Length: 249
Image (cartoon, rainbow, N blue to C red; front, side, top):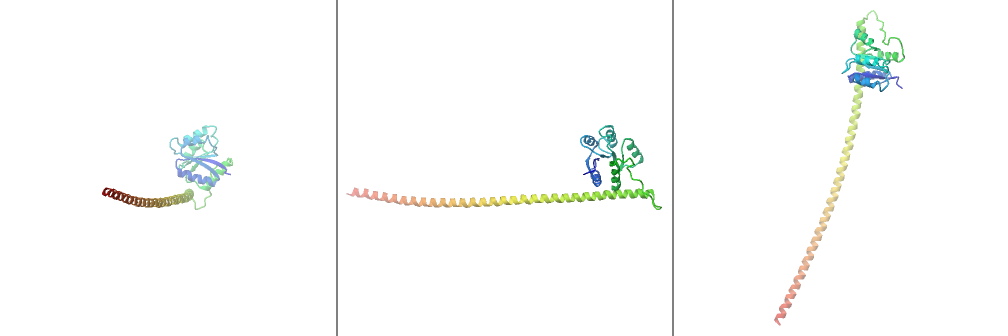
């Protein structure tokens, strides 16, 4: 049983897929749309426990959509996270001022996202972001920032790789179905051709037999007519002889 349902609002299908896979790891179902207008319609039709909202969208931008969500009684209590590549402190402050629960980068780490979701779904009042790890004497803030970015990108690449494998597997299954349908249609056509050839052969044999019978019948008729003509000739010759003989007497 999923722990919750999330709405992903991003005009990039790739970004929606990547975040959906991350949410799946956190045992959340999700639905994605490509515009704020679609999202504002959908939130009144389905229940969502979390909303991930991109900033740059076609038509209404993310901040406008956030303000509308927070101004409506039906949606103002849904935690909304800006899902964006912008990471400036000023942007975070603006997002919080408009009611966002936080800002998540497009290269977010899987573990960080899961912990944040755990805190939100548990109604934890603590800050949903992870605390910064302790630095050793040889580490700097820049090193940790770079490491976090690399980890996030590796997680993104891992998910993209898994998605590509699924697409390849789906394509292979599709090609197998297409090949099966082609073989079925080919066998059907071959069967039809065989039946047509057999029908044509039978018709040809029947026509040949019919013509043979007709030729024999015609030959017999001709022979009969010849015999009758011969008989008529004999009868005419007999009559002529009788006529001639009577005249001589």
